[in-house]
Image (cartoon, rainbow, N blue to C red; front, side, top):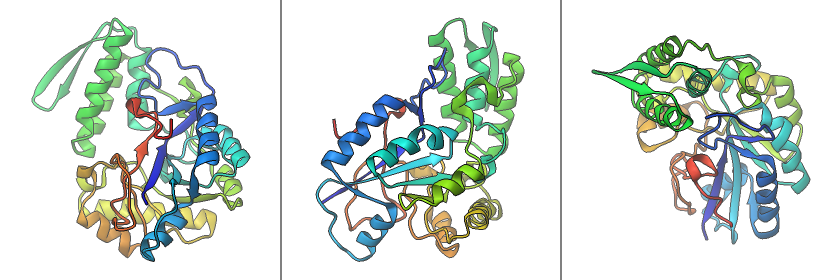
Length: 302
């Protein structure tokens, strides 16, 4: 028997404009409701604690075993997704980017999206490594293409260079992105998380402090991103954190050193964002997930 772990980011009732949410990171609430209804009727729903137990004990997964997870900690996890999960009694694990909780910061990808979406500039020039690239922004299609290209480049470079590029995009577009540009950009606060933590349905884990790609960091910074995020969750929820998820989560975004630090920090399970299904023989630090809705990835139970 296999296990499917679903990966969501946000669930929204907001009608996006322009290229906002063009990647499908926040799925529509009515679609999420229907997906949860299908899961409840057809799947054996497991928490990530259950997943951990099955794999460590080599206990076969039940038929149609499925787990639901969320990355980042967006406010709509609390306002929109939570009531739907509760209605269908579906367990879910939320991996929190702790440096974004209870403040008005934006993820760098949302900064790029906001600046490109709201600019009236028709062209911008961005230095990507040795190349000065000119982006035409006169249509939604061209803005979407620019966003996709810049994001892809930034996911393979250092944090310092990524910050420089985001700053250059803001300067070139002449748009300073902010949390009020979209409800989808808002993050949960600790009061919301503490309330959810009272439910037996919900579990919280780490997703580092600033959503940095762990494998790209020097060991000292990598260790701080991991340990500080765990400590922050434990201090606020008064519980031991044993669950984690790699930011970005593709094969080049984590390595043996990252796993070593996670294990030494008390983490027992850390799924990736690599697409696929799992068996009880799989490594708890290399589990695959299905990123529903993101870049047109389909819900696997249609």
